[in-house]
Length: 104
Image (cartoon, rainbow, N blue to C red):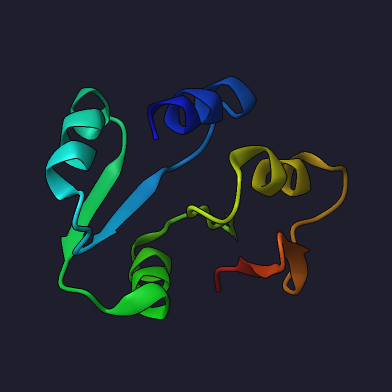
C-alpha cells in the first residue's frame, strides 16, 4: 500500500487518493501503513458492503473527472498506464478487465 501511495505522487501532480476500508480483517495493519498519508488522502472506513459498495462509496466521495480503481487484483502500473496515455478520459475504457468510469 505504501509503495502504491508513493508511486501515485510520482506520476501525477493533481490527484486525489481515496482509500475505502470495507471492514478489512487487516484493519490495524492497514491503518498503521496509512498513518503517514492521512493528511493527503481520504480514508473511509465502513461496514462491509462488498466490492460494489466500496466502489460506490469512492465514486460518491470523488471530486475528479477520471477514476481508476486499484485493489489486490489490479496493479498500480496497469491502472495508471491507462490514465496517462494520450487522449480523453472516457467511459468504458477498460483497466485490468474493469471499466474506467467518468464521474458525472
